[in-house]
Image 1 (cartoon, rainbow over the protein chains, first blue to last red):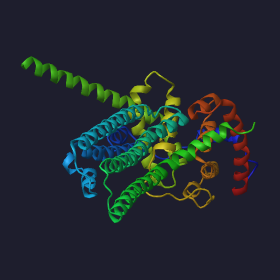
Image 2: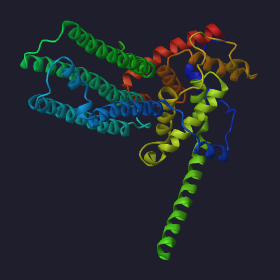
Image 3: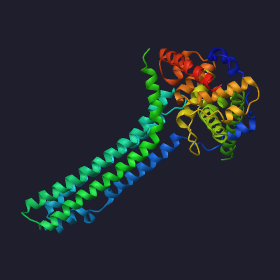
Image 4: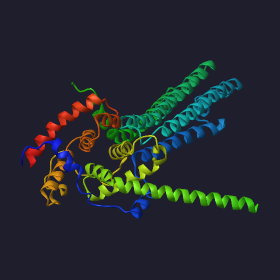
Length: 224
Length: 181
């Protein structure tokens, strides 16, 4: 092969024959085809994540106080359900519920807002950045949900200790151990499961986008 | 009541006829520019099935952004952006495709053509496919004679960096073409 020169090859490239020609009917049929794309995929995964975490929040919101595990635990540990304890518990519970709803509402709004900003006709870097920002909204929601879960558990645990102390109740050490280990194991297990899911889904979807964004950044940071 | 039904039916008729003429106009636009979409589809896939799927996905994405494009930018800019964005970022292949890091001169790109020039074009496709996604886009737009300003804008990089990268890519491609010819 003679020496290859890309510039003199431009004409040949531009004049390459198009092997397949689609006619009007074939093109029109394509317009009704179902799209198979990553953004759609990310969108539905995110909707499922939102629904799952919101349903969990709603479940706690409508859970009656009699069914609440923490008050039952408090009784099992030997404390009495006094009106003062119930009223303090109600207040804490109400604040946490409202906080949880505000957080969910804020993220649903951000999720929709960031989704609407994704435009296919934007430049490649802008598009990738917007998709990543969109997905990050959902990830931030999951992360904050984990933090809220840990915070709720910690606050109620502190509340139990505070109530026991106020009533001068000393629970049996075996019951106390079961309670403390139970709280730690359940919380750790929930956090681990959510974290694993987060790593898996986030990793698979984002690796492709990150790779392309890295390429663009490398080009923009190359030594001239 | 009858008046309302009549007015609604007339609105619907207007809507369907406008849609039909818009679809026709769009189909013509795709027909006139399908070479560009075919090139992108061929550069970013490794099988004929994926190539056809990508072509259709690009057409669909172009259709969905057709309203926002009208009058806002050049046809070529809009088409390149949507086609490359779809190929690089959006497209989800059915099955895992073969890796293109290793140059495979037995690839269908190469063996299908008899004409010497077309054999070179096919070899160039195979060689470009060994490059990372963004570099493939730069080479394709360069070969299609897009100014560096447009190449840079379509990718979201600076014009200077697009130029420097392309000069380096010319050397890489030359070496690979001569090695595998």
